[in-house]
Image (cartoon, rainbow, N blue to C red):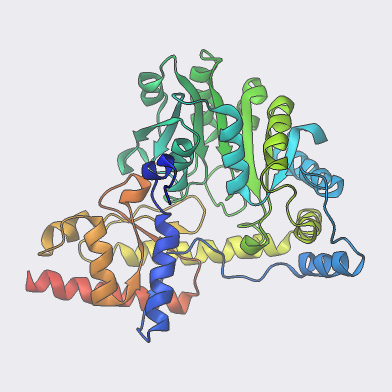
Length: 398
């Protein structure tokens, strides 16, 4: 069987590959601690679960509107108004099977073969390959730790060409945990105002897992003059620990939403009716569990960053949110014989410490590793102890 040529341009998700490898080793009896998965280790709020049960009992088990139920779209509208001071109509909202599908359908609707998409790196591993899958050309702009992993207007200006159609932003970021400030967004917005052909995809899935110095701000809130070409991507997976429920959404121009509805109607059709009922309850309900989870992630973050910086050969910047540490292992890589890059380093940690982490290279940041702290403090303490002991011994032997 001959496979489509487009598949040759993309790679399997590195994060899912690490999770699968860790699960495989555990199943084989190996003592492995997996810190690769980006999934909250908290239960879904009870109100969402109760709403799902009620939906099943009330017969809400049929097809819904392709772009989401009226109830969920209204809950999203209220959330955007409450949390972001943004006003949207139902025609400007589409619900998809996870934020990933919302992103992919947006790219399908916007990007023609040969169009260029600006992807600041480090970035989520799926962005560049999604662009390639729809025939676009990802232009990766590297932002290192000296600029807190955030792209500057100067970098963007140098990369913009007549073929540029989209800028993909993610704040707080996966994998770095860094978030853009209002001033940083406004500086980017000032540049983009001079380039009306460029849309802005603002991935805000980690919005509520945030503890930066300033209040969280959406790109559309910081740059209201660009609202008509801004696409806000969000969902319930991270803030409400609902990864398996697969509900994401996009708020953006109505013409684009209409186009995405057409794509969705010929691919997945509507998201799960039961999951939509649960998501509406999560968005409309008491938000205490969201804040409690955020506070616990902040507690883990504070401990983990300090602990990582105590490990020889490792350095790590504090984050603004999400639940990832993104330390540099550059010194350790140089010092350990046979370890030449972050891919080798991740393999070395798996073999010598029983720790599964994601290499930085797939995120566009060689020399770094991503560690998820969506795990209990006991697990994190055990993992750091293993890493510390293994590296200390290796550096002493070197």
